[in-house]
Image (cartoon, rainbow, N blue to C red; front, top):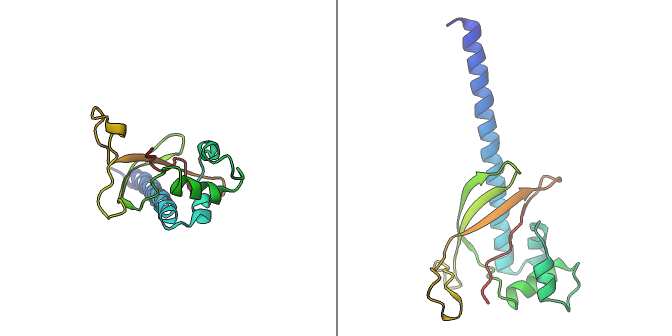
Length: 157
């Protein structure tokens, strides 16, 4: 193999390694945004959590018609304290993939208030539904470069 061909292959290899490193850095940043979002919700820092949310507020607005629809912190407070959203701490966050649309997909497990693994059971005595302890969440990078969660916390009626 001549020197020119070896240099070309080395160059291509470095480009591929660089692309992989950038992907890992971005997924780490997306993971950190996800963790911070849930940490803020679990501590009642609703204003900070609202800054890290990029999904729809339609459900929270419909659950809380007495609140100003533009007061996202108040909507999160209602969601977490009244409406049944489980604003828990994250036990584990596993990166699954980055979609072609630029979404970062993670599988999360949560701690219940006692510190045990949170498990969602079937509602209202329904034994046909298997308990679930892993939940999928999506994170997107906004035009401002910040990562935002697009899914609401687990809901328990």
